Image (tube, rainbow, N blue to C red; front, side):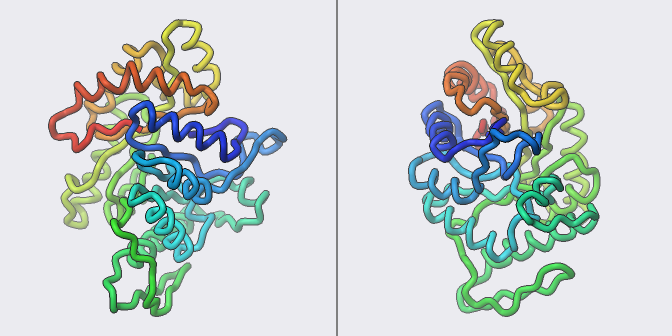
Length: 315
């Protein structure tokens, strides 16, 4: 979910419910407090994990998370506890997607410090993931401690220990730091936006090399991709939904057209190795769009999924 003008909780819940009813496997939201236009007075911000906690109690099947959360927004111990709490509220349906954070103006508007150095933001992301996953996996009776350049934890004997432990998603377009951090911590590597299967395959190859560098079997991680989508039953519907997609960059990476055209686009990406597809929705009030994709696209993707794909996920 990427609302153009923000959303109230009722709007987010309606979309999550429509997602579940349409047969999707998961509902993920963005982690933003401001729109792309910082002067847009119509933007209605909501806090990510607060809304996901509410949705966790009002849905029963879909998995829940953020794609992706900003590591700059929350201290790692608090993030570990918040995600573990929502995981319990959902009956174990939560996944943690985490990235470096990037929107400097958004941070300034809400009084959140923003490290100017990209190197520092990557370092902080790695330390956050070490703390969050370390806390979650600390055996009962043992304490968790961590000393880093940016964060430290002193002998926490009561860390949050979610059961099951939420999967971790890390991804992006970076050629070095992103695959390396994902290889260390991620249960799923997300290839972000991709123009075509060749571009996506190159990112997956970088992740596989990063896994080889530390002796990890890359087959232990899922591979996903983000796809803006504008699907219509008629040319007029396609044009209307495509016009909502936020930028030329997004439209250049989007699946736009009839259900047949959307399936063809997604088949190219799954052929490059993606086993999970996140369909990026911009008009959050167009619930008929969700229903159309659920009825006309998802069943055909399920039929063509590779036998090696764990669940053929479409989110």
